[in-house]
Length: 466
Ligand code: 6PG
Image 1 (cartoon, helix red, strand yellow):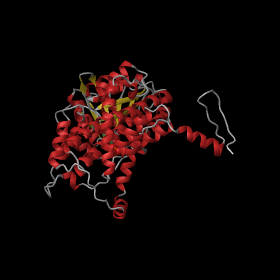
Image 2 (cartoon, rainbow, N blue to C red):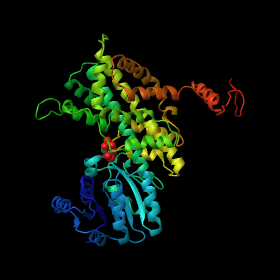
Image 3 (tube, rainbow, N blue to C red):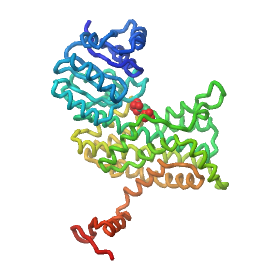
Image 4 (cartoon, rainbow, N blue to C red):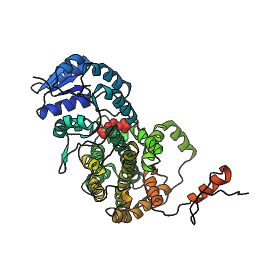
């Protein structure tokens, strides 16, 4: 029986997506150049409509026309090597999907390269990790609308579902899919950093025990903070180390690694002149965390003076909850403003409300807050930033003082809350009509004759300051 879908790359994500498709009744053919991965799929898919190809040619020959083939191989040169190998075996109308975390500019180059061949190239972000791939990810395909029409049925069947439908949509032209996934990851970095800061304050300033912390995150996951990442935090906090019986998280070295997608978000935002300091800080804090030896050395040079501040635990917990709520919203605000700006700059034609809809299930940044975000963009598709939306005005007004109190407490106690305070400072600056940037303009004109605008009349002015 010919297969309806081909998968190249049978690592965890590819393997699980194949099984997911097979469970939904699709006949799938998988190929990996590593015979061990071929064997693993053959064994674990016994009784399912799954075939395993031993060569690329065998995979291509097994497929119905137009062929639908997904690549789930590490981002970078390997993607190009696989495209070079498979594309000569394909024909016009076939669809190649890159489901990895490729940089959007690479996706643009690949589209450009494949367009003359008539092969549709779909750059698709896939979120949800290995469990998501197996039981329902959120998927962000972009590129060729004609290519998507051939994929829609399969992707909708394997996607996570919410009351708002399957978590997949055609995101837009060109590299829109990979751009959207990159922004998703930037928001992911920010949310994770915010959670870690709140955990740090509760533990170090609040003196909360590990089981109390676990109960707090579990409780928060039943409130407006309900989200995959808060749920994950509660689960992580519950885990004991088998060797020492200590909470496992306390045995883990405080050096956070990264594969670079958060950094790409910050880099791209800089290119497009979009401020997203919470995401920038989240990326920087991963670098800072990695500088463990330097931190130890500096810590010895600047020992903490005794902090006599007394902390009211219940008040601290309430402030932390509101600060996290605030920080999450600001992370989404910054990411979505970048996505709108990129859509305009790169002609992606992204529908932001629709992206929010597909982030409501399956992906790492899913949360109940997305319901209101969706509402805000449905009310105003041209919304520049959710801070401007009537949906969020009462929320920001209510939360901001608690974030300020918490930030002050943390700074006084020498607790790093870089992402929380960046979120608050961003909000303050964004909602300040007159910033001291007039002075910056004056300085630029003083030493570089860069000119300035005036508040009382149009035009460009230069002053001989001396
Ligand atoms: C997802 C994730 C995933 C990402 C990891 C690791 O949406 O499923 O974003 O794609 O690769 O979370 O990212 P870092 O190694 O950069 O932290």
